[in-house]
Structure formats: C-alpha cells, structure tokens
Image (cartoon, rainbow, N blue to C red; front, side):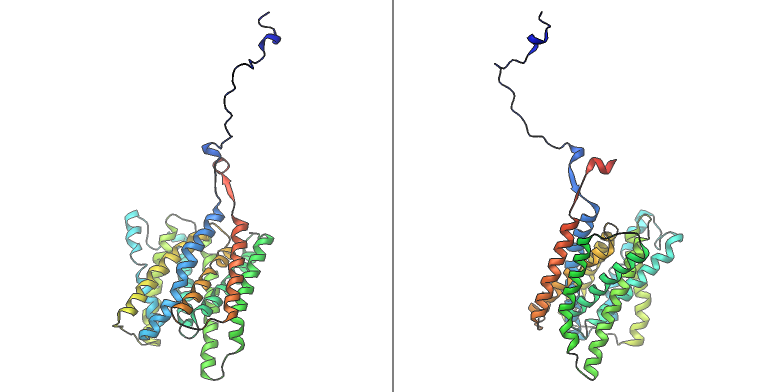
Length: 337
C-alpha cells in the first residue's frame, strides 16, 4: 500500500524552495557577432582617429608649407618598427611567397590613396576632402563587392549606404557648384579629383586585403605599407616637391600626431574589413567626415556651411542605421559548434 501512487503525492505542508530565474550557462551566453565587432572597431578605432589626420595635415601645411610627400614619408616611418615584431615571431617581412605580390599591391594601393588624400587637403577644406574620399570609397566598395564577391547586403544596409552617400552629396554639393574660375578653381577641382581617386584606391586596397589569408597578415601589410611608401615617396619628393625642415614645434607635433593616429586607423580598418562587408566598413568610416568638420570649424576656424551640418546629421543617422542593423549576438555554444 505505501507504494500506491495515491500515497506518493507531494507534501504540500512543506514550504517549496524559492524559484530562481533561468540563467544562461557559460556556453550559452550572448556575445557580439563578428560583423558587430568589425563595425565597432571601424567606428572607434578607424573613423574617429582618421578624422584628426586631415586637419592636422592642413595645420602642418599652413604652418611651414610641409609638402604632402614628405608628410607621407614621415607617416611611413611609423610603420617600419613593425619589422621587429615580425622578426621576433620568425615571420618573413614580405609575407609568404605565394601571396607576396598581392600584399605589395595592397600596400601600393594604400600609398596611392593616402598620397592623394594628403595632396587634396592642401587645396580643399579638410572636411570636404574627407567627404569625397570616403564617399567614393563606399560607392566603389559596394559596386566591387557586388561584382567580384558573393556577399549580399540587406535592405537596411542599402538604406544606410544610400543615406550616407546622400549626406556626403549634401556636404560637398554646394562647394562643387560654386567653383571659381581660373587657377584657383582649377586647383580646387584637382583637389576633389585627387580625393575621389584616393577613395577608389582605398576600396581596391580593402578588397585585395580580404583575399589575403596567412598568419601575421596584419603586421605584414602594415610593414609593407611603410616600405613601399618610402620607396615611392622619397624619389618623388625630390623630383616633384621641395623638402622642408620645419623648425616650429607645432609642425612637428602635427606630423607626429598624423603618424600615430594614421597607424591606429590603418590597423583597425584592416581588422574590421575581415569581419564585416567592406562597403559597410567604409560607410561607418564616414564618422571621419564629422570629426574633420568639427575640427575644421573649432580648430582651423574655417567656415562650416549649414549644408555641412545637415549632411553630417544625415551621415550620422545612416551610420546608426547600419550599426543597429548589424548589432547582433551569437550564442557561444553555437559558435563553438
């Protein structure tokens, strides 16, 4: 009889233990996805530091007429110490032989992109030069990814891309419509063309970098950028421009800041493009334009038109759409599986 089901009912006279809310175990916790990590790194480590590079380059030019190729040489010098890291790890400085050509091509494209950007900010306001460069890189990255890669963009991503491009058009459109005639207008138009070519070279470089897959890829391409930049810029400096040795501390401070911030931005963008779509990375890098416009107004005391403020707002809204769309998390257990 004691084993009868009737006598095995629970004892309701005893207090039940307190219920605990269900919690995720360690292998089920939520962590950011790769795309989220890439976009956040591109925003905080790529776009924001890069926004200071253009204004600081312009300040160095205004203080001592520091030529663009000499500024590029100084930036490349900050990349050369990475060779010590490669040596300590026992990796070849130029990368494995089978991918050495593509790695050098990536470095060459980045050198051309930076050289065009530094030349553009000397004749065009820093914010406008950054706007044209980032806009062209975003559009070219999206078109190249559609033509050469199988990656698809969602509707929200396309909305963010079109919105950021519209914001850039709002910023730079009025300036293009009021170009002066004569030599000044010609130099201004040439500055915008150089900024566009810099964005095109940047998008090609990002696409080439995504095809590289070997250990120590990031430090290798960073070192190659410095090496290729020095090899190409030193002869060009003496042939096309006049070297300048600035004596004021402001110029040297700007040059040092450009080298450090540009190196941080280079590493972060190279990492981000391996985690997220290159077009989305370029769109998030439009934050550089907003930072450059703020410095253009508060530091360089250059005029910022209402259209610049409106376009910057559109850019920030588009970045918010892209980031919110890609803010997702993955279960650690699913990732391990």
